[in-house]
Length: 528
Image (cartoon, rainbow, N blue to C red; front, side, top):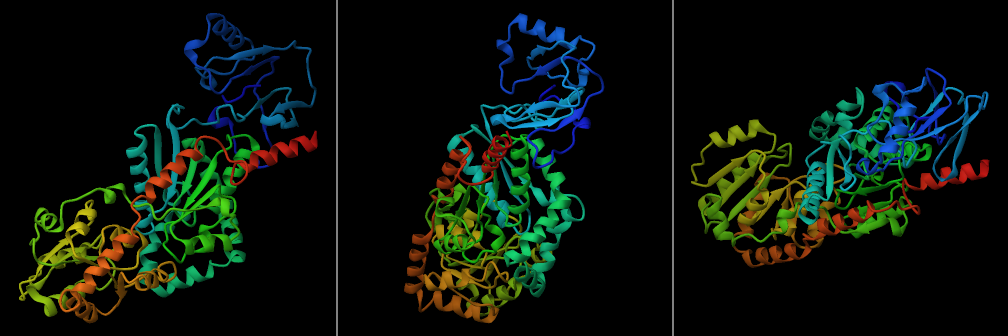
């Protein structure tokens, strides 16, 4: 019986109930080889290596391709010792399974190595954290990158952070094409709203995602085999239900050690119910309103942590005063600057808004436009000149948004949670010019009720509001900036990273995916 050395071609996914799966071997033997998970090869004595070599030269040796370079503990039994049609494969915690063993091979059980090490031999001095996201808008990747950056700043190389687009890279067709439909749906907001509302009830999305899991679970198993994480973190609402089910089945069957699972909610107020799964170890939410939604969906208070949104650590760093920052960015130091942000897709009536600002404010302000992926808009704005003399700086994707926010006086943006949180940290008054139906609707009253901005979709009225803010209502405008900065939570990502690091230390058997180990152990004890 060989633990942890099965060639990939000879191994299939384990059923979710069995603690061990015994697979037929090609030949018979009375020699059984156990391969412990964590033994320092440098500490193995010559006699141990000799014993291993002796076992490997018997008539029933494992093929060279299936051998591991790690030391082996060999236990030889007489050939007359035969269980007949039955044998025993031992699982961790005393779990056992009776199956054909006369010529069989057991797949790895925790704490032994799994079927595929992936990413080379995982250096166990470094904890590995898998962050699951998907490129549906820019916010999910931005949150993942913020967590990774904070880990690197706080802990250096102590943790290995992997960011994976699970839908795009680890599901089969046609499911791997789903992220590509996001831009189309948000540009046709009625379709997006319809899909958002239809999947909101649990009695709809739970069976729906369970059905989807039938098609994508195998690829997720392969991903977890490859990455061998010590902690799994989801920053996407559709990366709870199926991954949790897959992880629980792997832990229950002994393929994977018990690990924790955390959700980081990246919506600010109104959140889709798929964010909240009772099978998580921890659920990090940005606001008390989100905590209330998590509780309504069945999560216990001990599972919910309120820190804020994970924003890139660079936003917490001190920058030069605004006039100097403007000069660094090539702007006029003493002219008010308006920052227009269209999100990753360059959404909204940005060009029309710029036109009306030029018409109403002229050279009394300057405008910076972040166009994202919208290259058509970027080219049009760069080719355009404004008779009023207003200066317009158009950019595509930028990696120094924190500097642009530090250099500008006000932001005009859709109600995206990440951009809003960054604007609050930067102390900017916020003029919301649109929202994605559903998850961004609640962000509008958050801005208005806290007196840090307003909401307006008409480009003409937006220009009129800016003219008031930069003119007769300047004192109130400056007070909005002060209130905005007081709501910012630059420390949120550091607090979150501290808690995530703690979750890699040991499995939490009270909540989350690790409880599957306790369940398997209890079932095995009852069966015995």
